[in-house]
Length: 310
Image 1 (spheres, rainbow, N blue to C red):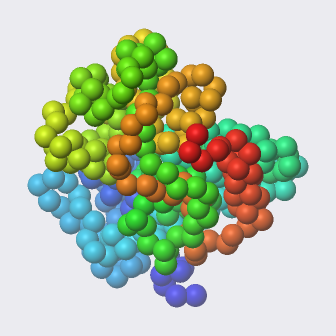
Image 2: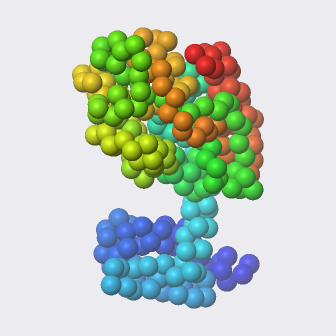
């Protein structure tokens, strides 16, 4: 056993991530239920184990060095694997035969996720299943850290295919929707000039599709509409139900909601980039039968409920 293997502890990894996350020893110590002097001594022990300085003090707090950043990456992966092992063992102890942790981009949390979960649960009742809903970027980080097994989301063009596997389900763009009581529903034709007269619910300003949308409107010489950036289906539904908001949605999701009578899809091509809805998981993690089964359940849900072009 090397000195590194013999001395570095799980607690050390938790300490490194806490200090990196909070940026100060005082806040990290509170989170870890330690005294600040005890935390400082632990950092000295960690640096002896890895053979170098892990953090440097700056005017803005504690900043990881290059060695510290590498240690944080490995700590994320190791603690994620341990959490996965803990979840699996707890599932077996409860009489389950394994676990699956699914992440889903918030705009797909109603459809197709809920139907896919019902299908998976019906065919795999002995699997302990957990679902996390959120933003794509945060869910990718969680998957990289090992706390998610698979992600249902858009497959962005900048995602490294050497790191991630993907199973595309469909490719579509974004459309504007509104309540069936909106004035534009009764219009004989609808143009972008008409739409920018109303407030919109869109992605936050740092989102790729929002940046592309704003660039397109500027290129056409149109004023940007009043917007609220939100990636919440519940919020969007409530806002369109009680006001003349236009809501930007993935085309496939909008089609399902329109078929149910919840929304109206405006007959307008925004000309935005089309991207794939896909199941995504890491290549360095095993493609377990549970992952494959959930992918199959999601694919079945999409094929049985979504009609392209509706």
